[in-house]
Image (cartoon, rainbow, N blue to C red):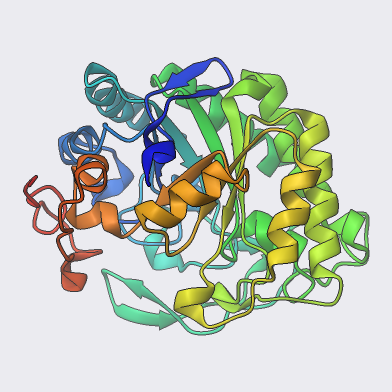
Length: 358
């Protein structure tokens, strides 16, 4: 039975039509970092999900690392997002903006003039970053953030969250997963600081918690969620000694702030790492808000986890790419279409807005 997945859910002040969430997915369609009509069409097509979470959206020029990702730091970006949120709301959907500062995972060729690659420590991410200008390029060594830089970054998240509300979003998700800036501070593989923001697990969690508290103070805790990905090796991170305890403690502190949800990403089926059941269970116990689980779900498994109390919502990523009507297909048992991997990050409508409903 998959009925539980399609029951309504109250998320903070919002009544969601079902327990299906669309996970954030970078799709690189925001030319000049501006949301546009193409994005509005894409999200509106998928508005039958209970909660849409946007692709990673930069809170500042320093947060832009990939080509053609949108931001929420300029008036033009706010205006562009207004078209997206209006289109989603007209179809009865709810949408949160994911605020993603890439930290060391970027390249100056993908950043506007004046943008800088910054991180907790001057440790380059492994591998390469694709640039439109010169193709794949090695990740440069980032500049280690000063305490003033950290304070400024907190305010950048706050400003972007306020811009999100002005643009019509129902809330924001703080991206503290997948090896980006907030996750880089949490993980000692990227954070080699010896000041108040490094060393112990508590100190490494300080910056993400400051961002969470300040954002909640600015727009209301009922409008702020966060995404975590314990043990995930993406972008050169991975598990570390005491990782489970560190993430459980962080989740407890986030619960104390009163964030409306915690979105737990498990990419172990794709990336081949261990994600112990104990991590999920202990975070569920530590965090009193809604829990969104994500990672290789189908409708039956999602409904089972909701029925058995392991999750409140389940986020689906890649299935939403080729199935704008994913909710309806899962509910009716209709077969899912397969996405074209070659168009995941290419500009234009192909592989983005041209997948038909069943």
